[in-house]
Image 1: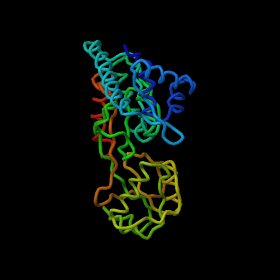
Image 2: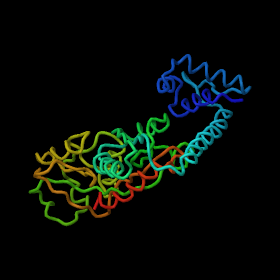
Image 3: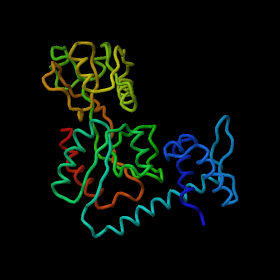
Image 4: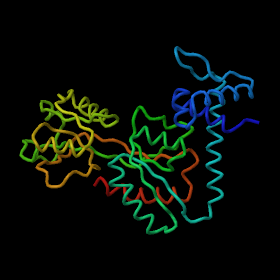
Length: 299
């Protein structure tokens, strides 16, 4: 009989990439996590890890075992759903997402859910994309809004169920007296020679750079910012122009103008659960609310 706790340690090593990182996430010592893997290998009579440089990598036997482990986790999620299938949404529901999704989608979703399902208690956590996948893997969140990115687990990853929620267009944001401010729509190439303010972190930085590249230029980045409102203030002070997603709620009354772009540069937002967790009553109720909120959020 396979010890499922040891199997979970192996899944964590695969998710986080190293035994040390997996141990930290599971609140183990590195030696304790390594011992769990060694014991699982002895139980099965196969090698699960092999040296690679200064670290280790999973053996083919471990990769095969992980496919079964992910299926077991999904079946467990489905079993919990089946037990709760006839129940109204209740208990704790933990949701996560980036700042824009929290402000415009998760906050109003929570109000609606708690009005309609008084026995449901929603807890929101603002996190980045990679953190949301970690929280889902660890069982610390039930539903995440994530931004599609090449760095995310693939859509076919057996651990996660990722589904489209909305396309969030990028607007060109310029000072209110800028020559482009009076246009109904603008091509990004018209701003090719401007100073630009760019996001520091991916995936938004990747989206901005890709949109400019598709318009035929590499932006001259004069300043970097972490927060969309910081970006807006830099634009308001005539320090450059920027692409900002429409979902971002900016400080009111700033002397800036948002101009829609031709070519529809945008980012894709997805809802993500653990595989098998989407039909849990509380999660299903939250997804219903998000689908109702999404069309008006970027109108």
